Amino acid sequence: MKENSKEQLNARSTSESGIHTDFTNNMTYSEYLQLDRILSSQNRLSGHHDEMLFIVIHQVSELWMKLIIHELDSAVSSVRSGNLAAAFKMLARVSKIQQQIKESWDVLSTLTPSEYMQFRDKLGQSSGFQSYQYRLIEFMLGYKTPHILTIYKKDPDLHHILLKALHSPGLYDAAIEALSKAGLTIDPDVLNRDFTQPYKPHETVEAAWLEVYRNVERYWDLYELGEKLVDIEDWLQQWRFRHMKTVERIIGFKTGTGGSSGVNYLKKVLDQRFFPELWDLRTKI
Ligand code: HEM
Image (cartoon, rainbow, N blue to C red; front, side, top):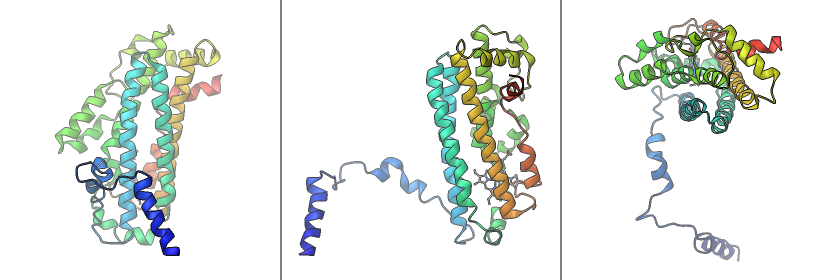
């Protein structure tokens, strides 16, 4: 009796529910997502059980970074063309992704120092420091570090992508341009700055943001833009902090595989700022 009802259920799930089971001439879920390529890219060099976690966490983070870059690219264009509403949608998505990536440190924290030391030497000198997508995000947000490009000399395609981003205005440059287009005074030296260099805070930019934050009704769009940027920097710093603490938990104060001082380097990176005036104005308002 029980078996019969199981069969009946199975029959219903394939025929009555309309679920497709014959894919002789149709594309499947795996084919569309190219899962054969993605799911065969977890090559554990040590064969150690926990190396799978280490690889998957990095790959998942890189996939999320890919989506962040996709969104930021369009968001910068939208801000530059004055379509702020479209940019807000994309920037809100970026912040949600950042929250997701930050949560992944909780999973990685289950890796103990003894487990990691059993396969760490297999990484050689490779390190997240060489993540070109991470650098691309930094460049798109306006934090430019030209010296980093030497890492990618051996890959002309990557080198070209980063070089282009280095020379292009970042999200903060686009936001400052929007302030100027709204009639707020910005020094022309800032508007025509050398985009290959890291952004340096400027008094006219701070005065313009202060004007926006003191008159939110009048400058609602720019005010919302400012807060979206603060969200992004806030989440990025939270990611950096959790990275630093997770690294301390796993390798203590050992030097990094990329050659840096390790945790001390990661602590120093926390001082880098993307949108300085948007933070400084909070003391003055
Ligand atoms: C056991 C896990 C991890 C350890 C021990 C670790 C360690 C380190 C260390 C020591 C550095 C400084 C550069 C160096 O000397 O290598 C670094 C940089 C970096 N790591 Fe990790 N990391 C881990 C996981 C991850 C994960 C999951 C990601 C995600 C993509 C990641 C992304 C990065 C990035 C982007 C940098 C460059 C940071 C900057 O220069 O601002 N790391 N990591």
